[in-house]
Length: 475
Ligand SMILES: [Fe+2]
Ligand SMILES: [Fe+2]
Image 1 (cartoon, helix red, strand yellow):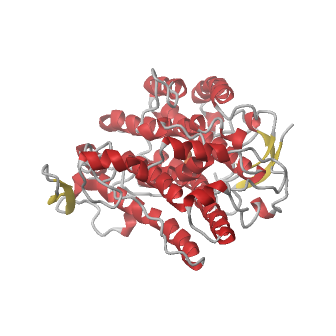
Image 2 (cartoon, protein in one colour):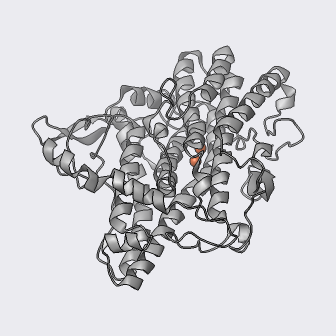
Image 3 (cartoon, protein in one colour):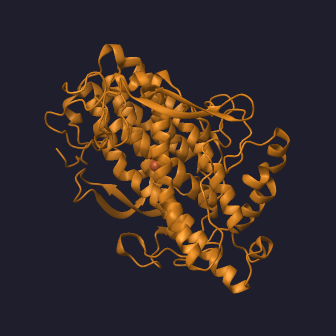
């Protein structure tokens, strides 16, 4: 079961050949996907040979094979983690009952909506990153960008497979729509706001892969708990790919910091203007990018109070990430302590039913996970002898969904006046001038082993290859 059949037109480990109708439907969708990749995928790099990993099997030992591939020839396919024998529902009102191999009629539209919303983010990020290749800081980074891009393309396949296999005609129509909406498009935008934000520089790319792909990790983890077994198995395998995306983000930001500290040492100052004049990213500027992408990604978890989240949990559709770590899996009697604005410029504490607060539970565990990288970066800054520390913005800062919408909250969590907020916003998130400066740094570096001046080289190459390896052969 674990090994993947690459002789089929669509690589898969789901015995696609035994279901002719499904195979035909997906083979019909395949050229539409390739056309989308051609039009919306990385621009102008279709002829390049990219050192990519491809899944060969879904078990821990041998899932990846590395080799030079032209991106349009990447073997996108359908890979599910192995079925867990006798798997039982692990949470909600049906806890302990066998998981579902088909979609129960009463949950059909909710499950379809959840799958479509997740699926929509995958091609959206490829579209957001379409032009980044032209300003890559090194071949190593260019390769990582493309690796992330082809895997997001595969994640689209993962969700489209579920839509085709389990949702009939509606599912097939949704699969077409996933290729018709486009990031930032005025008429047909992607579903979630964060996935309509342009990613036009590499600092944004690293923040996106650190913060937004990590939201993806938490969504996938909650689906991995689902009673709908094919969704669970799909997401479990996607998580193994997702880990690399967050690695790109964490090491990317880490390398920016390392380079900045070198420049600070060289110049003997932490003056942002001096650091910028030397072509590096000052730490306050990096903090603004963190504030922007973290707050934007926090919206992806939805409202603090949500009856949809309660129903999805109670019905077994979507669990909490790492559900087994909790004691209570039904939550009918549990409450959650929540802080909401009191309407008079302050905040109040409220106890709400835990089931209704599950978006907030997820957001809290996500933020804890985000802290890990921050701690690591701050240790490096501390070791270099500097007092500044990077931090996550308050979860109440700049929210466009939920209880804190329209509230004037500073990144440190203090509620401020509207005037102060407007005046200081560009101390907190990148201003036009900041963005213009970052863009001015984005010059393409493609000599093997060379790095742009604003970022340190990585500690090691890919798959034990030296840094000087030609990870992308541009023709
Ligand atoms: Fe993904
Ligand atoms: Fe990702």
